[in-house]
Length: 269
Image (tube, rainbow, N blue to C red; front, side, top):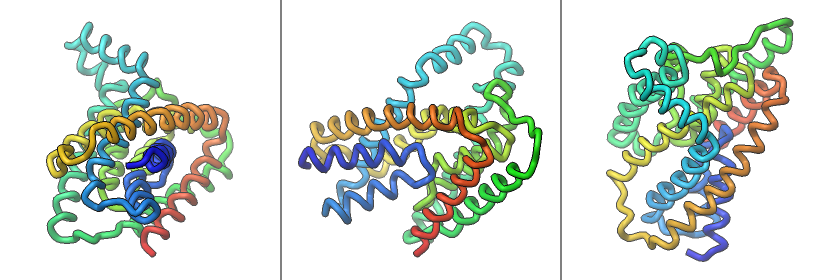
C-alpha cells in the first residue's frame, strides 16, 4: 500500500471509531471504492486499524485502567463492591454484547451473508432523537455520573452494543445510546462507551483473527496502519470528550439520533 492510502485509512478509522457511523463499514468502503483495494486484504486492514484505536483508548484511559486493576487486585473478594462499579459495568456489558453479538454473527454468516441492518440503526436513531426531544421539554432532570455506574447499566448497553456486529451499525452509537437511555449525562455516556471499547474491540479482534490471516499482508503496512489510526484516534477521542463535557445532553442525544438515522438510511439504500 502507498503511504497516502494508509494515512487516509488511519484518518477514517480514527474519526469513525468514536462516532455513530460504523467504522468497519466506512473503512471498507473507502478502501474498496475510493482506493480500489484488494477485497482479500479487508480483514487484515480492519484488524490493524482497530488495533490502533484500541491502543489510543488504552493510553488515554491508562490511569483509570490501572486504578481498576489495582483496586480489584487489592480487594478481589469484595465482589459486590466491584459489581456496583465500573468493573461490574464493563463485565456485564461485555457479557451481554457476546450474548447478542455472537449468535447474530453466526446467523448472518450462515443465512444472511448480505444482510444490511440499516433500518435497525434508523430505529435506534429515532429512539435516541425522541429521548433528546423529551429531555428538552423536561426541567430539572438529574442526570447520572460515571461514579454511579454498575452492573445493571451494562445489561442494556451490552444488549444494544451486540447489534454492532451487523453491517452498518456503529459500536459507539449503540453503546452510547444505551448509556443515555440509562440516564447518564453526555460526558459520562461517551466516557464509558469509549472505555468499554477496549475490551470489546480486543475480543472482536480475536474473533476476526480466527477467520482472517495476517500472514499474506505486509507487516510494515500493518504497523503503519496501526500508527496512523492510533494518532488520529487519540486526537479525535480527546477532542470529542472535551466537546461533550460542555454539551447539553438533550442536544447531544438529538444530534446523535439524527446522525444515526442518516447513517442507517445510507446503509439501507
